[in-house]
Amino acid sequence: AEEARRKQELARIEIDKSRKEQLQLKKQQLEADRQLSKLYTDERERITRQQHVAAQEKELAKRRENIECRKIQEQQAQENAKRRALKEAERLQQEQQVLQKVKQEDDIFAQFALKEIERFKAKGKGGTNLLTKA
Image (spheres, one colour):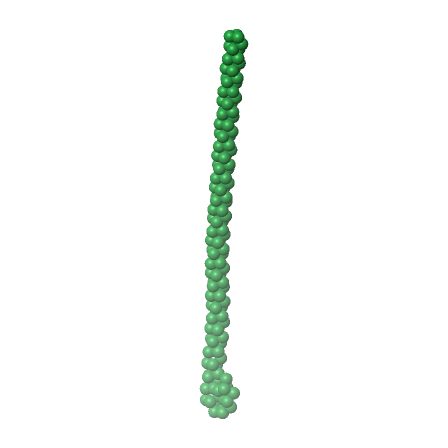
């Protein structure tokens, strides 16, 4: 009987030991799952941050490009305005020269007409009406 009781005790000790090992293994498995879950969560957060930073950098690059395009457009607009102003100034100068030349020709003709009127008057001819009107 003692032998049977001892075998039962040893079997109970073996069962307890096996249960403790199973509990320990289950605890280790839960801890490993928790760590794996944390690693996964940390990795997802890192990837999300990385994507966010990349999106911000892309937006910033786009803004810089837009600013540069705007500068170029403004510069081109200024150059076009300057070119138009120079063309207009040149056109006005040419027009002024034409007007000055026409005035000189008018002055020369007026002087010629006055000389002719004086010459006709000096000869005593009275037909200077056409020259006077001119």
